[in-house]
Image (cartoon, rainbow over all chains, first blue to last red; front, side):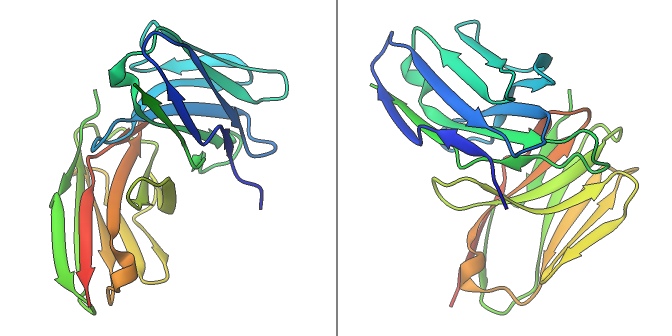
Length: 114
Length: 110
């Protein structure tokens, strides 16, 4: 079965640079979520989109922005990168029409800021 | 804000033992609860999802229970194996975003 695809899998950037992370949800899923997991931390919710509209907002810094496109893929744009942004970034998708509304996670993008 | 707590933070058991991981949450108005497994530096593997109207779910050697009124869930692992060694995360959905606990790091020794 198709899973959530994230690219790139690894990314190394320098401070003050920008980064773009991409997420391709499972086909027919209409909702995308972004989470950030710092070293030794639990995943923290950043932002979500339902049918290409922002749905919920968590602890996403103002330096970050995200959107969901017409083909339902999503991109997380990160600017003025800081050392503290080094983390594993997960994308998850779900279909709200399903009774369970289970979230399926991608493999993550490991971002290292030097 | 929903707070999710997992106890214990770490657990070491010999192979073959049955074990219980605990998760508690502060707001009982949840939509569902998911248990995940995470290997070091890797992604999240969903183990079980319990809807708010359910009491338990089973998958193989795993059984998860939910007591919404008391804000508790347990993950029971039967006949543990060294391959079960990983961090187990409990996550609660009160709307759509998941709130995660800090996890229980499990080590099963041969």
